[in-house]
Figure 1 (cartoon, rainbow, N blue to C red):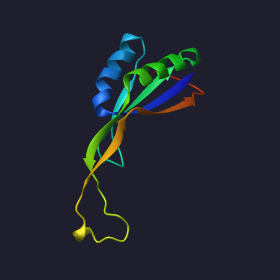
Figure 2 (cartoon, one colour):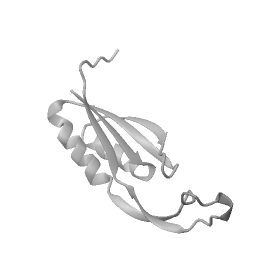
Figure 3 (cartoon, helix red, strand yellow):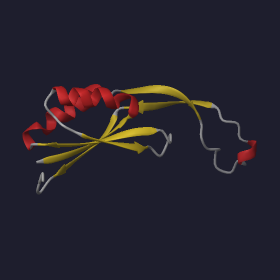
Length: 110
């Protein structure tokens, strides 16, 4: 058995959960916060049989596509006083998913 931990952007989460459920997977949904943008993320815990892990990962890859967006730079460059810093828009990549796959030694449902 495998435990897939998928960290996805909030705007992809509902569609991903629905897609997983439509394909017979269940997931536990946790609200989390990312460090770089300090924006909301969703972390999904998905338990699957070894033979189904790649199918679940493929669904995550299909739903959670990377895209670019404009945002204001959060931190002043090193050595620059924060009071003299004017944030400027930068293009960043968002979306996609960070996926961890762990082997599960034992699974109990009580």
